[in-house]
Length: 317
Ligand code: SIN
Image (cartoon, rainbow, N blue to C red):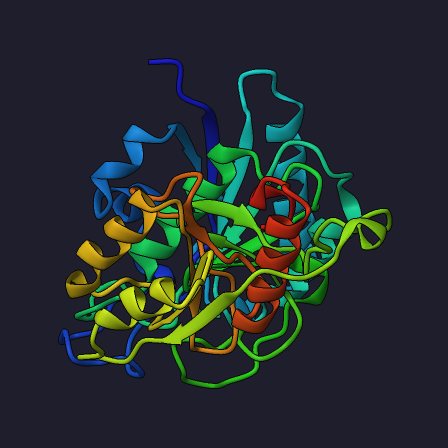
């Protein structure tokens, strides 16, 4: 299989940390496991990339300094110029990740992906976060989605811009959360670079005489799907479902959605959470799709304009 070739540079940190017992998340030795041991915990990684490993040091990142940074940068540079390397992944401690990440981001032009990752829980802990972080870092690097963004860090399912990375919590699993560094998500690897601007249609107004009915239905656990039939019988040509989580359709609503689609009523999956993008799911199609970054009220207006202008809804979503 012609998988991307990734060079993993392991430098230590909690991601390579080991404690005496599996419950310990604060008493452990950072930088205990070598890079190959980190990979052994995620055999699936070999389905995404062919990996080579180097280990310039294996340290708690509080003990790094300019000499280590230059060594790391030189190792990254060496891998990037190697025609047999498509991307670089670096495992690192969280405590000074932002220093190394910023330095690398300043030193390398965007191009081959450079993806750092880390962990808040030692590798020995139950529910250690390192294995998934590393797997996602490899997936992001292999996907190439960050080719134009510069150096990134993949942490807790999010892609952070190295230029804005900031550890903000001493202990929480989402220790890098809360700033403005998140530029995407790791599963599937995708960028989320701020609100999209849905298409503008300056010529449309003159042809509009009225806007069709589009309803928004708020769906709670146990909500009755017969609301769909009621909307349609009152003339709704499209329905925005304001759903739990990532626009997740409860099983009991499936039949009602199928009936709506069979009557050429468009159905959009939006979220009642108030933040984040609703992502496409298997089973979506041209008449049933995710609202993306649009809020339920915005999705409703977009559908009204699309229907009135006889435009494919893809114009707006
Ligand atoms: C370190 O920064 O090496 C230890 C702490 C951590 O990785 O979370």
